[in-house]
Amino acid sequence: MKLYYAAHTCALASHIALEDAGAEYSTVRIDFAANEQRSPEYLAINPKGRVPALVTGRGILTETPAMLAFIAQSFPGARLAPLDDPFAFAEVQAFNSYLCATLHVAHAHRMRGTRWADDPAAIEAMKRKVPDSVGACYELIEAKMLRGPWVMGDSYTICDPYLFTVAQWMEGDSIDPSRFPKVNDHRQRMSERAAVRKAIAVQLG
Amino acid sequence: MKLYYAAHTCALASHIALEDAGAEYSTVRIDFAANEQRSPEYLAINPKGRVPALVTGRGILTETPAMLAFIAQSFPGARLAPLDDPFAFAEVQAFNSYLCATLHVAHAHRMRGTRWADDPAAIEAMKRKVPDSVGACYELIEAKMLRGPWVMGDSYTICDPYLFTVAQWMEGDSIDPSRFPKVNDHRQRMSERAAVRKAIAVQLG
Image 1 (cartoon, each protein chain N blue to C red):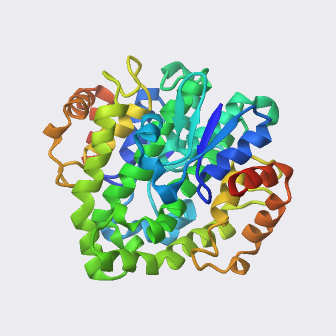
Image 2: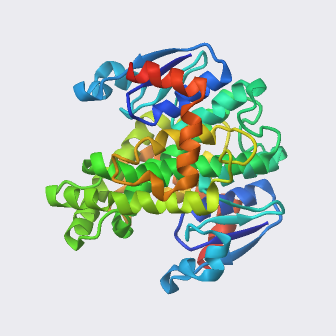
């Protein structure tokens, strides 16, 4: 498998999960500063012009929640999701969907406002709200969603690399991590895992 | 199971899938006009203050992609997803994640702009971009994603009720359905299915 990623993006979640799974894979860095995600070569891989994308023997996958579930299902021995329990699996997926469609979307209004408005003043107004809108997501995660020690409780799952990945953006979004002790503790413990260190070393190296 | 829904929302997708699955379930309407989704009673069910929510014997699920996969896995006889093929299942999930995190999000900037900005002029600027941003999603779906006759090709899956559901919003988003013949044909064929007719009759009745 081949993972296309860009630094500081949600692609880190799938990268960590591939490490957790013990998968054999290679990585390809896409340079957002050079707008490489819009190159004809990359659009042939992912017509959305986004990362991540995962090239597999069967075809190309996109969308972090789908890729994480795929990695978990493809490497069942790594026990990255409760694969034999549809309800528990749905809880994993609901958490990841919330990160993807609510938290990540709120965050994206800081840097990617042109997706949703053209007026420069509107784009500035979006940026101003990011600490509130992303902060509200962490309030919910801290109070209602993160069970501890891992997201789903005693078992490490594909929710954990995804939460760790988006939590890397807190400071950039002007959110004080100390407001969210459970999220902060989770982030600290994740950062010490070998799989996380390796993925970060590759992506930021 | 008990499905909490509001009319004209993405909850229709799970409602149709429950019908497709032959599930036994009841429904509860949440009145957005009365702001019932923010009532203490409903926040106790779904602290996000959104629909849908699905009460099951094991607990409560939210997030349409997670609920659709749960319904498919809970009723394997209905064959609503390629459950024994992780890659094909991931393709289903990637499609649904795109609807959730990109198309639905773009659409939400027409009515729910206060999630992402406070300035009234910014909220108006967001509304103006919706035909473009949602239209771009349908361009990609029409050209690259909808295989036909169903989203995933010959087999009907949980992608189909979800696409049908969001496509109901096209006119409201000032998108001419005739620009997208494959999506339009899919919508027409979906609207003739008994499960779709029944779910719509309940939700809009």
